[in-house]
Length: 104
Image 1: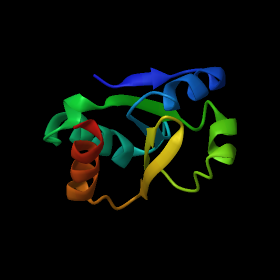
Image 2: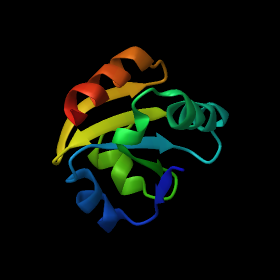
Image 3: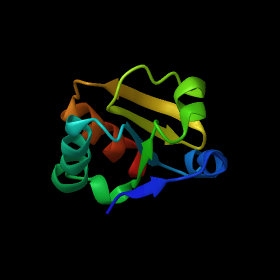
Image 4: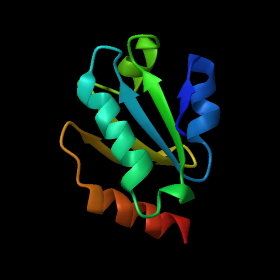
């Protein structure tokens, strides 16, 4: 199950963890839910990373600070550093390899 970030002040604490995936979504985006479900159910090594959704409609400051121009956008962070950013079109194999590399 993917947790939802509901307050802006939670973001820094979350992205400073060892390995974290944040999926930036919108309430009106139908493909956002599909992408989140694929990430949650079909990734080989997905249990090795903490997963979070953030609705940019609710936390507009996140959209501006992290330059989210389109949704869905997948961001992977490790200890506060952005390792990967993909928007609209996703290379699931690349995401899977990155998670495996940083979690071993």
